[in-house]
Length: 73
Length: 73
Image 1 (cartoon, chains in turn purple, green):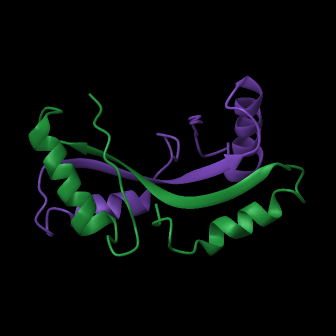
Image 2 (image 1 turned 135 degrees about the horizontal axis):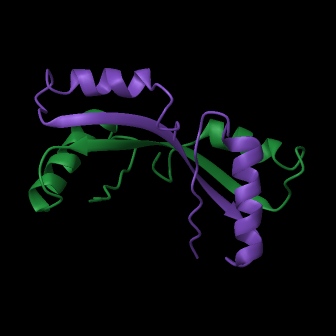
């Protein structure tokens, strides 16, 4: 997701359009990306470290984006 | 996220590039979207129903995409 202090024009456009489309009561919308990645290995600390390194160096832009890693079996 | 039976060329391109970029051991990558939405009202069943209707009718394309709704306080 874009960091909270970074403007998200796409999310703002969606938030602006929703009341016209019949969905009032929306305070804000922010849009981001989501990756589902299958890695070799057990869902342990080492795999989490690999996933975090992958997210930080290649999938996210840490200058403007935050990311979280969730491990699943 | 795209449904599992729908081809995801963007995810495949990432999965194909990762070994070259120093990340071996990646079996698959699928890319999707994520929305953080602030709605008026309490995080109860009614708000969940509104969020699900919003996702199904406007944010996702239910022909090719699955979605899940997570409520947070």
